[in-house]
Picture 1: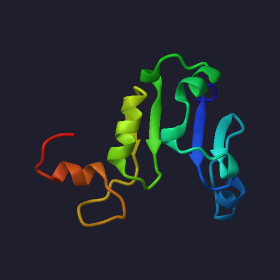
Picture 2 (picture 1 turned 120 degrees about the vertical axis):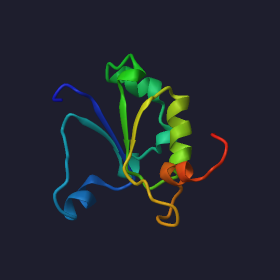
Picture 3 (picture 1 turned 135 degrees about the horizontal axis):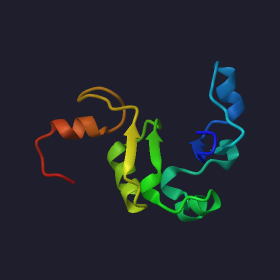
Picture 4 (picture 1 turned 90 degrees about the vertical axis):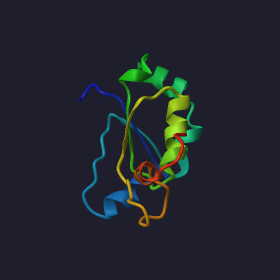
Length: 112
């Protein structure tokens, strides 16, 4: 993994994250954090991927731990043609404070 580009998006400044305890910080990682934060849906992914030598979006893994509507994030990721997605906060029906794919799965409705 030392040669794998990592992009991190967080509205929190890295120093604040480190004050809370151990946190993974990598000098080879590109951070959109604090005043440089950009929401996932607003990132120019073609430019970012090109800057990091990534030519194939099927080789990208997206790990969401952002406590946002997962259906919205799924649609944003598919629009950019990202297909490998992990959602950390998959709340069950009646729990959590954002819409999760797990909740969607439990509904007997038409697929999106």
